[in-house]
Length: 332
Image (tube, rainbow, N blue to C red):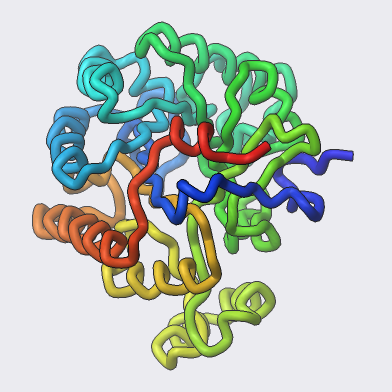
């Protein structure tokens, strides 16, 4: 019996790659609208002013030898400017496109706006399906290619998400954020999920690529049990990190320093992780749209973060990869 996609997989589902694959890194970008992360969800209170900055970041990636995958949501997929910028890179083979579902801005709009309904997997089956298929069709039409990877908005998988991916022929999901628990806001719990890629189903038709986050510190082997307890005590997690006892490190430039990320990379490689999945949100490419990038100096640090990370990955013999390469290299 297959486990639901939002629950930890059954034993023996680890994905293995051909010997030529080695250890790779995939850059994923949640390409989405700008909105106030602190405000109630809104269908219209958003903008797309950062979109021209995507072109500069794409050029930056090409200079690093990196082909990013843009996980586009409805506002991006329906923006002529965004489609032109991202689509040009996709057609040139310098980027790939996937899909990301933000229910509150993705038609049809048949649900109440709420924190619970902001997770796609919490929606009624038929409504999640309608939104998903509408977005899938739009991505195919806009970019001229079928998306091969999906990320649920707010990492919000549900009991019907896997069936939607199979129905639409999307072979890869990257919604699992290992070591994170979103139950306090009525989302899923990924605290017990593996970090390495794995097959969701026994038939090996749906591959999960978890977003990379690791534990670092003297207690990292016990992090899965200790860190959730620390987060319930004010300042305890910060004290544990500063003392070198335990720190959760996500491989993202948003709220994570380059020094922290380098430690995280070491932990992931020491554990034999075959694929590292980096992530961030496209509105961070312009100041003022996310909590992480408030000034141009913050933006400079984001670009420097990527320079340092990819330089270190090259030193550690970790090569950039693409969704196409992942699909061609995974053993079934």
